[in-house]
Image: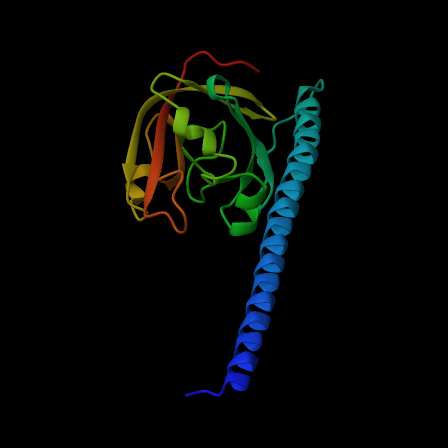
Amino acid sequence: MIPISDQGIFVKRCQRFIRWTRRVLLLSGVLALLYVGLTLLDARIFQKNAEVILEKQIQAQEAPGAALPKLAVKEGDILGRIEIPRIGLSVIVLEGTTSQTLQQGAGHIEGTAFPGESGNIGIAGHRDTYFRGLKEIRANDEIQIQTAAGITRYEVDWIQITVPNDVAIVSPATGSALTLVTCYPFHYIGAAPERFVVHAHRQERSAN
């Protein structure tokens, strides 16, 4: 048996360990919340600045005699803005789908048509930030893509759940289509096992 004096020492050590463990866990939680808060703040600031840049691009294209040059784009470049009025979704679209790019906005999927062009435009976004509103989307909803060249409107055809490696969802199209992709389920904790896909066709009516 453990002597009473030693038992007291053991109990005190356990209590001290528990107190320090609580402090460490509390500090870890505070730091995690601070990191998330700073990340979201940085993303919000980036979105506001990107909106200003996009408006300048639009004004430059609307100027008399302005041309529409085909420029090479790189990861993180601002391509436009996607809006879904019915669900209140509005986010800047950037080139690429790296982790950093998707923290700042929606990302154009490499190898798909560019916003405003013919073909199948692929755009990805995080389910817990910019594309969270997609859980409320439904068939026939209008999706607008604003670029420096003007606004292109799309109408949702179908929504489906698929596996992460289903590359067919962004395969080239002969007409003008738009495919939005995010992780699924929306409230899943950790790496989501499926993908939520929204497919839309281009409306004949468009505006500049």
